[in-house]
Image 1 (cartoon, rainbow, N blue to C red):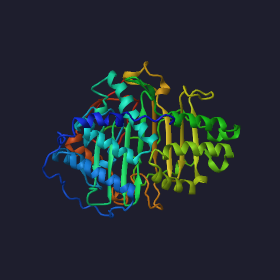
Image 2 (cartoon, rainbow, N blue to C red):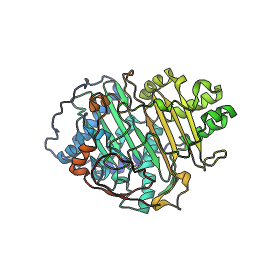
Image 3 (tube, rainbow, N blue to C red):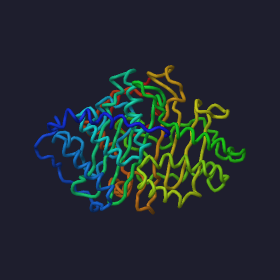
Length: 431
């Protein structure tokens, strides 16, 4: 992204001035140790200085929480809560963990500083614009459904005693899984979206996916007729192929050993012109380098080793040359990178007030790759949670009291499929 803004840091001194003279209101002097976990496969703490800074800051954040909040937001590495994420409006009651609204001002600043250790400046800017600006814009439309305070935090494992730990930021248009395992760091799956994706909130302009959009358009426009024919799909649907779960209570359906082999279609990197190849590389890097550089470099090396097995697919709804203000979809499949971009179309409460192209969803994953030490989606923890194979979690969540019923409004069209599960939900569709 071309312009980096950090209003949160600019405000931090002012906010900390109110809290520096006393312990955080949510903090207590009581023991905040959570129940011990017996997760197998964990490793010792890393000697990497960046990871050690991440670990120390997470330990300090955890120690600032009350016993109640720490217990509510913490669980074991092999807990299925890793997979329970979706992009339905949060409603402040259909997520596990603790929410932004549960934290004091200084605690929230500390957590957002941890995000900036894992994310690049561009990556953090996107998260900020999604969770603060776009969600703030939506809060004016329906405050009980959309609110920056509703974004939740789940923490997995104990960074004080282990080198294997992580946390999940989960909310309406932002879900990122931050994982540390020894010297390995991962941030996938990562779902980022925005409605509106570009606008102004509180006098601050934002255009969350300007690079994902504009770099892809440059790639499209660099393709010759033969390449366009190979890349273009005739599909009438451009929904995310491996996006979030359809509804609250459903686990990520693409976890574990999901088979991506059917997506080896479209225009192959090895069959592109040198110009098109260079443009595709720029688009791919936009997704990978949402993570801080040193760890993104490790991920990128795996991608480049397999670059000739990369496929690019484009769907253009308008049937004409796409522009920054038209609807389109693209996806990139590489054995070590999955990236999708979709203009969703405005629906529900925003139908008619937001242009269809201005509602964007993206998903970044690493397809199942047992040959890599870095793991695929959910990193090395996937094998811990899966027990070396995917689990069906519907029954688990059907029996869990905190997932019994949920009423919420969707801001998109939901495909209702028969998942053979019985837990109840009330769904209100608009538009």
